[in-house]
Amino acid sequence: MTANAFVVATTVDEAVHALAAGARPVAGGTDLVVASRQGKVPLPDSLVAIHRVEELRGITPTDGGGLRIGALATHEELVLHPVIRERFTALADASAIVGSHATRAQGTIGGNLMNASPAMETGGPLVCLDATVTLCSEEGSRSLAVPDLLAGPGETTADPGELLAFVDLPSPGERAGSCYLRLEYRRQMEIAVVGATAVVRAAGGRVTDARIAITALAPTIRRVPEAEAALVGSDGGRDAAERAAQAAAAAAAPISDVRASADYRRAMAAVIARRTVEAALARARGESIP
Image (cartoon, rainbow, N blue to C red; front, side, top):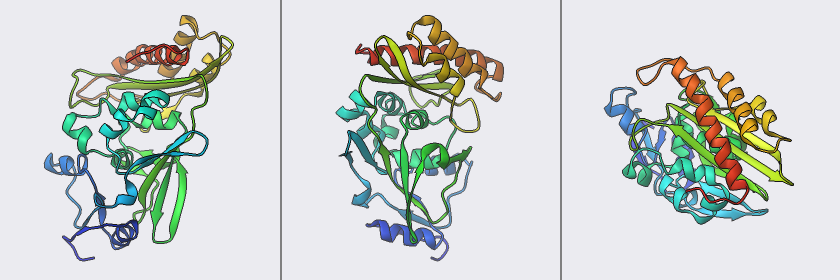
């Protein structure tokens, strides 16, 4: 492919062929174009538009109660999907607050993941919900867990010739509740100063499983096993939620920047994590939290 080329693909094969020739994919363009306009990252010499690849659209059920999400599914589609709202609620929480209304209408789950921001909203829910991605190239396809995809700020383990095609979510199981919360200074066009995700399962008045991840507090979104251990086997009460929250804060490795100091982020990590855990537990008990 020649420099300064722009190709519109209509199939996955066409798209990965362009990637193999050195192009970079673009769908909604809410990360790539905005970063270029702000002078952060120049536009690539060659682009392949994938917005017409119908194979990459849709949210479809899979065996066992899971979902397959096409890489072109927008945040608006995610937050409006009844199954995601009911059974994968943390993902709906996150998608509902990505950028502005315009961003949610255009931005895609595939682009959000491949942008690999440690502050991205959907990353924590996908990590805690055991999501996997399918990467396609001219050599074939492979499946990868989301934590194994994210390598660092703006970096993934995908090869340059690979296209993220699908995100697969297994069933969360019965009596599961999940939540994503973030600390924000304004309701629109904001990214997380601190974020936390909790996915919990309960039976017989006890927490039987817990997944807790922190956002914007480390180079990548990460789970916190110590926080999870503080919940499992507990009654899910205030003391257990507080122990989990303190463990999440202890695992944070935040930076200081123009938006918040490291000390402030670490202090707020405990607050946001506790609220997230409590909301997830309430949902697991059948309570309705918007």
